Amino acid sequence: MATPLLTIKNLSIGFHDGKTVSQVTEKVSLYVAKGETLALVGESGSGKSVTANAVLRLLPVSSTRYLEGTVDYDGIDMLRCSEREMRRIRGDRIGMIFQEPMMSLNPLHKIGRQLCETLAIHRGTRQQAAQQKALEWLGKVGIRNPAARLESYPHELSGGERQRVMIAMALINEPELLIADEPTTALDVSVQAQILDLLSQLQQELGMAMLFITHDLSIVRRVADRVAVMQQGRLVEVGEKDAIFTDPQERYTQTLINADPSGEPVAVPAGASPMFDIDRLRVWFPIKGGILKRVKSHIKAVTDVSFMLRTGQSVGLVGESGSGKSTIGMAILRLLDSEGKICFDGEDISTFNRGQMLPYRSKLQVVFQDPFSALNPRMSVAQIIGEGLKVHQALTPEQEDALICEVMSDVELDPATRHRYPNEFSGGQRQRIAIARALVLRPRFVLLDEPTSSLDRTVQYQVLTLLKDLQRKYQLTYLFISHDLAVVKSLCHYTVVLRQGEIVEQGDTQSLFASPQHSYTQQLVTLSQI
Image (cartoon, rainbow, N blue to C red; front, side):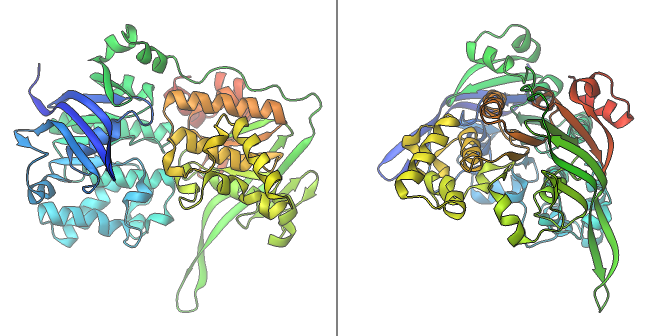
């Protein structure tokens, strides 16, 4: 056995709430050796992130109780060392990539400043050298035009670009151990492959160890030396990667391995009429400068995109982060200004203002990528789901409550939980709440913007099955944005492939994936291993 760099032994953690302590992990024991990758897998709420955050003592001080056990990092007792010593280790000897970059990046500071800050704190690097190092690392993680991005704020970047910035920030000091908590969740497969190759290269160069948390078993197969499987706060199985995948001993491990997306899309009704006809859609954002703030140039987010969406059909939009997928979705819903034609049921709505669009809003709904950000934490589930009913329908409180209960049953949530708040639900349950909110108005069209990317495979499989059942029951039409081609293949009848705001290929999903014509589509299909 190689020398352990990190050793966790019998770690039990609880959260204190008033008079009681709720235990969330039980006697977790694992190690990460120098230069190896240990993949930590399991469902949402299994204790993966809690265990990882405990290593750097990032759990809330006031509510966290370390009930028993030790965390040893290269001879340092991490649970008992001083906060000053922890600050020296965090970001320097141990780097961490968090799952949600928008919650981790400072919205008030430019990207360049945030990258340079960690170099100044841990290495004493001067400003000019730090800027050059930051520029180099933005290029390494695949950020286009890195010099310009140094001057950008987090909100000006796409979700995938923000995740790449987080990866650069974690690696810029070349740590001995990298804790990666779902580091490639928001990335398309091509950039994901680049990042995984980069991590592999750094491991070889630096002898860096990795504790890699993920729900994507295809990534585990690619990066891991050993695998640790967690369920409900306990380790249920630990072993070499090949042994885990070829001969899993525990039923739960077998369930995880067998939960990959599968099946065929729901049949489209015969003679389905066109719902959306998109013709030469263009979304260009002006860049203004000078004293008079004249338009100097444009960010060409989407250029001359054309496709059709039929009633009851699912169309997939795939492509790398920043390729214009979400921009197209927002433009179709008239949440962004655009040029070109957007015909809905034969009527051109491309120039409609807010008032003109209001009668259509109940028919056109959206489910976002991150349900926790999309749900108001101060509102109960009943208030969240029922908000649209108050705007679009005149109902009595009793009628409204009946509809809320009905739609919660449709998405397989217990209506008795409708008075709880979003933080009391798991990630998969929160996404079901978001789907219920969209569904309660009985829409004809739903924009699904990466609705399963943040979910572990078993929950993703459940949500995907739910979306198919709802489509079959209510004849829903989906525009499905995703970087996971296996999910797209299972749900979508037709697929549009985007790159840098333009369509490179489109067609029947099965045919397109079986015989892609464009080199970029071929690359996506190869990397997705579908």
